[in-house]
Amino acid sequence: MSVLRTGLAALATVAGACALLLSDASAQERKNGLLDAKSWAFQLKNLGPEQQAKIAASPYDLVVIDSEQFPQEKEIPLTREEVERMKKRPDGSRRLVIAYFSVGEAENYRYYWKPEWNRAKPSWVGKENKQWGGNFLVKYWDPTWQNIIMGGPKSFADQVINSGFDGFYIDRVDAYYYYGDTTEKRVQMTDFIIKLANYIRAKKPDALILAQNAEELLDYPNYVKAIDGIAKEDLVYGISHTEKINPAGDIAHSSKLLSSAKKAGKAIFVIEYLTKPELISDAVKRVKDLGFVPYIGPRGLAELYDGTSGAGPRRGPLDPTPEVPSLKKATPGKKKAEAQ
Image (cartoon, rainbow, N blue to C red; front, side, top):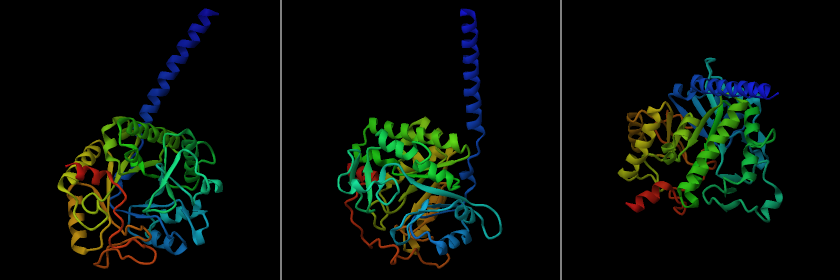
């Protein structure tokens, strides 16, 4: 029996090694479809039928949208059929449609939010984001939150996968900043994103993972390996949420990290929230000179901007962002600028 057990153990070891090799080979062979996107757009609000039709008719190679719409504040997930229609261009060719997905904040308008949390929030739910009402900072390393995100058939990740999206646009990856920006908190976030990416791809092997901001995490090789691209907000302008150019040191710092990821085969996208044509032209040129893909949008993200009018994105009822928003919200860039 001992010989048999030894033989079985050896076979198991060989099988495990083969599985790891196959897994690595599969990861290497998986196409990064984000690299084919030469234009992109971002819309989180106002995703009713009319806006869906505008998205379908738009020229963009990649569109990031919410996975749900909220008519009269009623949560309605986008259907697979709706997502599929937005993937199809007028000429019949395909575009990528990626779902917005927050990992560092809980949103009280999502299905997973329990009514009793409005009276007494769980210990892992923190303060509200003053720029985006209803969004609450979370202890992203907490098992309860991670189970909501990827804990089974009813988890948020599974809901998005079942709606037929091409992948995930992961926001609030930079939540570690609000917990002191320590090495421990950065590592906890990288571990979370790697775990999430593995969970998603076990169910949808070709799923694309696009992380927003948190470019400091690009120093972690396993994190870089887990994602397909980075989307950076306010690279050139707007760190203070005004239309002012960012400090040269901040631009250089972020650009260097993003360029290193590009050399590693990752797609890099940039969104600048600008309205003045001369600033838009400058930002687009700077971003393209770095080899990144730019998009100009209204900060409220309530509609697409196609750039054909000659003017910048217009603020209106669906984009209530004031001309000079509150500067109370801390940003990693602002902290770096103050430290210089």
